[in-house]
Length: 105
Image (tube, rainbow, N blue to C red; front, side):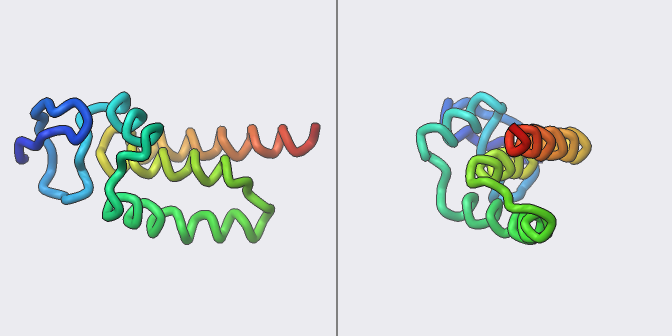
């Protein structure tokens, strides 16, 4: 474990040595996401991780840009170990269910 400095609030936090872990809390990730303060390296890594997943989903049905944005946000949380794999999968399932519900309206 290393001590890192959060890119948003500048507070120290314990983290793994991964270069992609840059935030101490979900609120800081949210702030970075809303204000477009994510660095290109982290963005590219998250895009790579959701790329295959979104292609599989798109094969089954068309996914909206908003849904892909939500997946991207979840990946950033998961990368920064602020959301477990199980929680992420549950959130993704809920997002897809909501999108399907919206399409049926």
